Length: 90
Picture (spheres, rainbow, N blue to C red):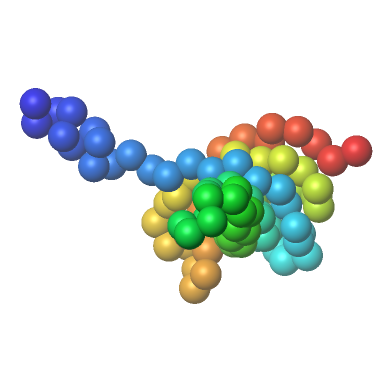
Protein backbone atom coordinates (compact mmCIF):
# COMPACT_ATOMS: atom_id res chain seq x y z
CA UNK A 1 0.00 0.00 0.00
CA UNK A 2 2.72 2.48 0.99
CA UNK A 3 4.74 1.67 -2.13
CA UNK A 4 1.89 2.47 -4.53
CA UNK A 5 1.09 5.63 -2.58
CA UNK A 6 4.69 6.83 -2.87
CA UNK A 7 4.83 5.96 -6.56
CA UNK A 8 1.67 7.91 -7.35
CA UNK A 9 2.96 10.90 -5.40
CA UNK A 10 6.16 11.00 -7.48
CA UNK A 11 4.51 10.70 -10.90
CA UNK A 12 5.69 13.53 -13.12
CA UNK A 13 3.39 15.30 -15.55
CA UNK A 14 4.06 14.44 -19.19
CA UNK A 15 2.87 16.60 -22.08
CA UNK A 16 3.21 16.49 -25.86
CA UNK A 17 3.54 19.67 -27.90
CA UNK A 18 5.24 21.57 -30.69
CA UNK A 19 8.47 23.59 -30.46
CA UNK A 20 7.62 27.26 -31.09
CA UNK A 21 10.97 28.97 -30.37
CA UNK A 22 14.53 27.63 -30.30
CA UNK A 23 16.71 30.74 -30.11
CA UNK A 24 17.95 30.36 -26.54
CA UNK A 25 20.94 28.28 -25.49
CA UNK A 26 19.84 24.84 -24.18
CA UNK A 27 16.22 26.05 -23.95
CA UNK A 28 13.21 25.80 -26.24
CA UNK A 29 9.63 27.00 -25.91
CA UNK A 30 7.06 24.23 -26.39
CA UNK A 31 3.39 24.98 -26.97
CA UNK A 32 0.94 22.36 -25.71
CA UNK A 33 -2.64 22.54 -26.97
CA UNK A 34 -5.40 20.81 -25.05
CA UNK A 35 -9.07 20.54 -25.96
CA UNK A 36 -11.78 20.91 -23.33
CA UNK A 37 -15.52 21.57 -23.43
CA UNK A 38 -16.67 25.10 -22.67
CA UNK A 39 -18.30 25.08 -19.21
CA UNK A 40 -21.50 26.78 -20.35
CA UNK A 41 -21.87 26.04 -24.06
CA UNK A 42 -20.25 22.56 -24.20
CA UNK A 43 -18.47 23.44 -27.43
CA UNK A 44 -14.91 22.11 -27.64
CA UNK A 45 -12.41 24.91 -27.08
CA UNK A 46 -8.64 24.80 -27.54
CA UNK A 47 -6.38 26.07 -24.77
CA UNK A 48 -2.66 26.62 -25.43
CA UNK A 49 0.08 26.67 -22.80
CA UNK A 50 3.74 27.50 -23.38
CA UNK A 51 6.49 25.74 -21.44
CA UNK A 52 10.22 26.47 -21.23
CA UNK A 53 11.99 23.15 -21.79
CA UNK A 54 15.61 22.14 -21.13
CA UNK A 55 17.34 20.87 -24.31
CA UNK A 56 20.88 19.89 -23.30
CA UNK A 57 22.23 19.19 -26.82
CA UNK A 58 20.43 22.04 -28.65
CA UNK A 59 19.00 19.48 -31.10
CA UNK A 60 15.44 20.81 -31.40
CA UNK A 61 14.15 23.05 -34.16
CA UNK A 62 10.93 24.99 -34.59
CA UNK A 63 8.08 22.68 -35.60
CA UNK A 64 9.36 19.50 -33.93
CA UNK A 65 6.78 17.46 -31.99
CA UNK A 66 8.20 16.54 -28.59
CA UNK A 67 7.24 14.84 -25.34
CA UNK A 68 8.26 16.74 -22.19
CA UNK A 69 8.24 15.90 -18.48
CA UNK A 70 7.95 18.00 -15.37
CA UNK A 71 11.19 18.31 -13.37
CA UNK A 72 12.86 20.35 -10.63
CA UNK A 73 13.41 24.06 -11.33
CA UNK A 74 16.37 24.46 -13.70
CA UNK A 75 16.17 28.25 -14.00
CA UNK A 76 13.70 31.04 -13.31
CA UNK A 77 11.11 29.84 -15.85
CA UNK A 78 12.41 26.40 -16.85
CA UNK A 79 10.61 23.53 -15.10
CA UNK A 80 10.37 20.94 -17.90
CA UNK A 81 12.85 18.62 -19.60
CA UNK A 82 12.87 16.83 -22.93
CA UNK A 83 11.82 13.17 -22.86
CA UNK A 84 11.78 12.32 -26.55
CA UNK A 85 11.38 13.72 -30.02
CA UNK A 86 8.12 12.33 -31.43
CA UNK A 87 8.42 13.78 -34.94
CA UNK A 88 10.92 16.06 -36.67
CA UNK A 89 9.72 19.15 -38.56
CA UNK A 90 9.64 18.79 -42.33
